[in-house]
Amino acid sequence: MSELFSRKLTEAGDRILGMKDNALIVHHNDADGIAAAAIIIKARQAMGLKTRTLVARYNAPLPSLLKEKAVIFVDFGAALAKEIDGLKKASVVVLDHHSLSADKPRPVPRENLLFINPGDFKLDAEHAIDGGQQVCGASMAFHALKHSNVEGLATLALVGAAGDMQLKKGALEFNRAVVEHGVSSGEILKAGRSLNAFDSHSPLFEVVANFLSPALKDLIHNEEASKEFLSKNGFDPQKKFAEMTPAEQENLTNVLEKHAWQNNLSAKAIAKMRAEKFSFPKHASLPHAFRDPVTLAGLFNACIHLPFANEKELQRNAKKAIKIALGNTRLAKPLIRNEVELTRQRREYIRLGLKLGGVDRNMFVIRGGTQLQRKNHGLGIASSALADSGLVYERPIIAIGVEDGKVVVEARASEELVESGLNLQKIMSSVATKMGGGVTGGGHKAAAGADGFTEGRLLEFLRLVNEEIAQQLFNPAS
Ligand SMILES: [Mn+2]
Image 1: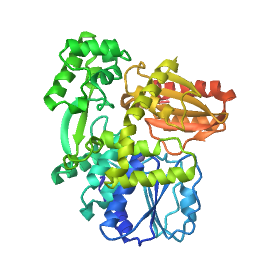
Image 2: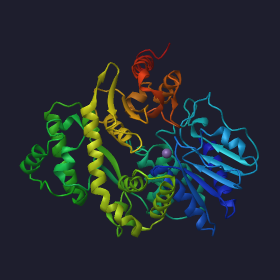
Image 3: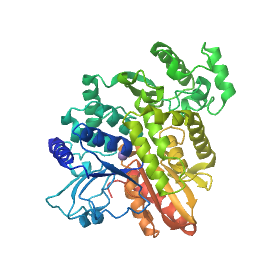
Image 4: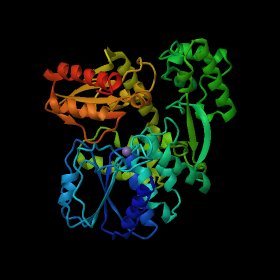
C-alpha cells in the first residue's frame, strides 16, 4: 500500500530533475536537512544542473520567495501551507517527513505543486507511514531520485536517518530500503549490532564513563572507576573503540553486558546497549569521520550547530556543510579537529541534564534555566540522550529553558513510550496553545518543542502536560 507514496516520490524526483538552473532548495538546519539537500544537488549535478540553497529554521522567518520560479522544500515545509499557497507562479515540490496532524492545513492542490508528507500515506491497511521512524527528509529525497542511479545517494540518506535518530531500532521500512540499495551497490556495509556509543572515537574509559545506561550505573560519570574496570578486564583504557577490531569490540561489549547481568539489569535494558551499525566501505581512505553514518551526521551538525553571530553566518555554514556532504574533506578538517570539543560539550549538556533534572509525576523535568539552552542545542541534546537511556524511570523528558524572557521547551520520549500511545507533538501543540504560545515548527510523537509563553505560566504548563501524558498513557480510550 505504500506504493502510492513511492510513486509520488518518483514523480517528485522527475519534477526536481526537470527544474532549470534557477531551482532553489529550502532545507532544514540539521544533519538530515543537509544530507537531503546534498542528495538533490548531487542528482541534479549529474545532469549538469545548478541548484541554489537556503537553510531554514522553525523559529525564524523565511525571506520572501515570491520571485522564485522553482522551489524544492526538503526536510522542511510541511507546516508552511500559507507560504506555499502564496508561491502560485512557482513550480514547488515539498518533501517533508515532520508529522502534520490531520487538523493542520495542507496547501491548496494545484498543477505546479507536489506536496508529500508520509503521514498522509498508508503503510498497510491499519497504519500510516511513520515519518518519525520509517523515513526521514534525506531518505525521502533518496527515494525520489534513486532512479537517477547516481552513486552516493544511499550513503547520504543513511546519514540523514542517523542524524534524525531513526536508526535506534535499526533501519525501518523506507530507511531499510536505503540500506538494501546501498548494500547491493557496495556503498553501505552492515556492521552488525555493537556497542551503542555516540563517542566511539574517544578513549575507552570516556566511552564507558559516558555510556548512558543503568547497566553501567556504578561507572557512569566516574572516569577512575571506568579505567579500573577496563584494566581489570584486560582492556587498554586509552584505546579508542573505533580503532578496535570487530572481535575486540565484540569482546568489550560482552564484558559490559556481563557486568549488566551482574547488576541485575533487565534483558530489555541490556539489549539497548547495542545498536545496528553501518559503515561506508567506499569512504575507507577518507578521514574517520566520513566512515560511518552516526559520526558523519555529527560532523554535519557540527557545521550548523555552532552559535552564529547572524543569519549570514548560518547560511554560509550550511553551504559549507553541503559541500562537505558532497565530498569536500578539506573543508571538514578544522571541524574534525573540533570534534573533541563538540563531544566534550555534548557530554557536559547530558551531565547537566541529569543534574538539573528530576521526576515530576509522569515526567522527568529538566529545569535548564539559562544553563541549558535551545539555541545552542543543549536542551535538545540532553533530552534526546536521556529519553532513551533508561536512566530516568521510563518517563518522557520535558526540558525547559529560558531565552529572551520566554520559556522554551524540548520534549523527548523513548520508542517504548511512543508504542504505548504517547504523542509529544500532540501534547506540546495543545498545551502550549493554551498558554498563549505554540508548538515549535514540526515535531514527532517522540520529539517536539514548544515556546512563546512566559515563566509565570510554567507551573500551569507542567501541570497540564502531566495530565495529558497520563491521559495518553493510562487512559487512551477516553
Ligand atoms: Mn529530518
